[in-house]
Length: 374
Ligand code: COA
Image 1 (tube, rainbow, N blue to C red):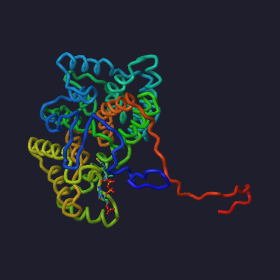
Image 2 (cartoon, rainbow, N blue to C red; image 1 turned 90 degrees about the vertical axis):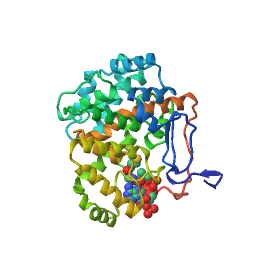
Image 3 (tube, rainbow, N blue to C red; image 1 turned 90 degrees about the horizontal axis):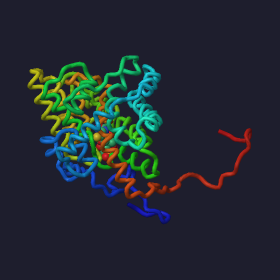
Image 4 (cartoon, rainbow, N blue to C red; image 1 turned 180 degrees about the vertical axis):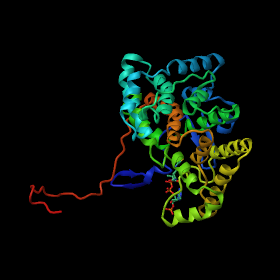
């Protein structure tokens, strides 16, 4: 950080600058990631989505009673008012799913004033997966799919997303991917949520701002962009030529690179193992081989590793989920991390209001209309 005119100057993109103390999670350049002190590998091997969500929100793993109450709370609050679905439908066929969810969350903020006063955070957490799963189909005029799977949050979300019946292993993998998407210290959307929280705006305002940040391909939108890229490459044998062409055109490869992880993303590594197992079970290795070939070429040419989005995308694809739903899935899980950040910010609040260095012109004279050039 450098100093200019009495103001401390932060690096571009705030890269490498710590702007908050947090007890929620931490990712490290050595490829480490902890949620509330638990390494991600430990949670991936043992925890359910609900246990992890409880942990992220409350700072400790739940007892059996607490877990039952939390899971029951998620299930009982998942009913979405018909007025919200009507608003989603009214956005029309061309609506982007993240815009649909964002609009739905905003409308929920008004409707919950009647339906769930004082229960804001739990209401958004429970409903986000229903909004996400229906963010593509409802604007197309199709009927909403509602939660009806007794096996828990991940199974419920999966049965709303696709009609295909998943195996136990596939459901287990999907739940791991949701756990990975839940939280990631000061990523762009969680930082956005904290900025909004610091104004003491309500959780609906913070969540809809988080959704706006998530939409871009440099953040949440990367999983969809990665899948589109893989579909374009088509075959492992095309990987090298495809990358050469992209780099000649000055393009980035979506699903690669990370602000923190420079050697490897631990979530991508685990997802790659799951993808391999899925490919082995299905007897069709082509998608796995394609992913592996693009990863190898990218490492050879740029030394840039894949991130979670790169390996989550083909997993969603094999599960039969439509590509426009990939970023909504991210939102359905990340809402728990966002709410943890919302609470941490408001508990010890200080308005987030940085300064800037003005580098524009000064002392200009007002020109009346008709006397202005250019
Ligand atoms: N494809 C090609 N080149 C990439 C790249 C990618 N996916 N990611 C980074 N680079 C290159 C940059 O072009 C830059 O090269 P330069 O120094 O020659 O200009 C260098 O690596 C540093 O990248 P930069 O974008 O400045 O790093 P960052 O820390 O700001 O970037 C991301 C992090 C995530 C924004 C970046 O890696 C990216 O855009 N990735 C693609 C989107 C994505 O997958 N996002 C999901 C993140 S979980």
